[in-house]
Image 1: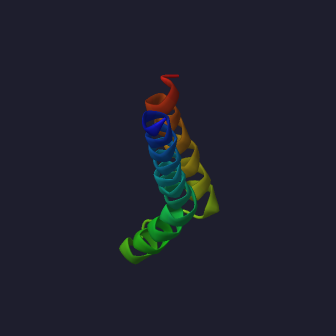
Image 2: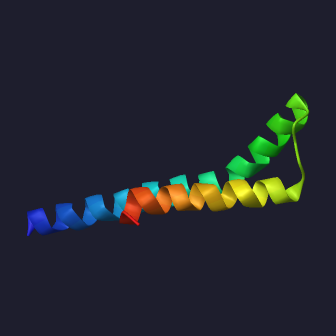
Length: 67
């Protein structure tokens, strides 16, 4: 019973950490990118953010699902 409880507990926490990580990388990171790129003078508009979002999603899907 303790092993089962531990299994669920760790899985829930792993899910939470992954969820926070994905939320951060998808939502917050492009905002940081935008500011950084504007500061560097190489920001190309909203299309660039969409492009980075798509490439990042592809990258994560390769890691997570092996697709």
